[in-house]
Length: 239
Image (cartoon, rainbow, N blue to C red; front, side, top):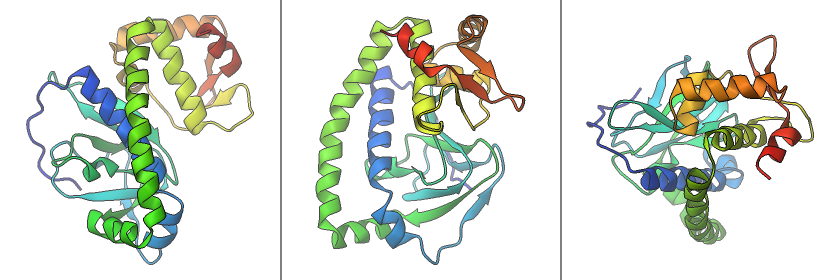
């Protein structure tokens, strides 16, 4: 489903943080009114677990509106390891960084069987042209994402490994879990390797932290292997 990827060079941490924050901001914009305008009459593409929706280096400018399932968004670094920016769910968008950069600096991979509607960037531009209010929102989000990028860099600098793991878990709870519940169950199945890719540390080190949190009854697993997070208790570790 993807084009030929270019060789991956070293990606500085600040660039990764900027791309992750920009991706999150753009994803927020390309929802709601965009979906109602762009998606009717389009047929979703089907992806199996592990299928690549698009890859680093692809030149095709399009976005994927997720109709079902979970998709991880990230990039690759010089030694071939993956860094995960975010986990997207039904109703979210992936591929939005093509608005700012080509060839693509990121990649999207289905975590489980998923379906998504592929929309060309030119169609998105046409929609923006007919909805000036959305252009103003786009400018506001670009400004806000600069401040958010520096916040992410500060988090990487200030927090130790445990703090970084806890922050990632809290972000997952906020993005994917049901609101106003505690513990929060993460409906997507995530391996320790994938969590380490979100933290930016070796799996062995992240596994040690997760085991410590589990012994303290702050993290557990459901019968289906989904994370169960004691959100209030985890949040207190960062205060």
